[in-house]
Length: 68
Image (cartoon, rainbow, N blue to C red; front, side):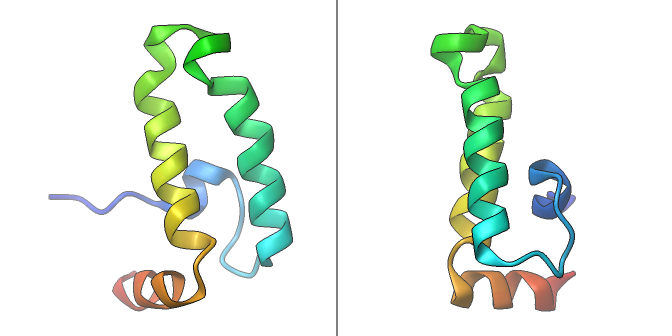
């Protein structure tokens, strides 16, 4: 099973701080939210949520970075 690249999903680098991660998530969530982009965007939106959940939490992000 291949690991998803959460940084790529959010369009940020590994050096990005938490504010920039939040800003990227909000921008992309508005673009890909199923209510706005339609039901075909559901999978992309779920990937965004998953990426944000991991990268916005310092402990989860640290664990994720060690797995890369």
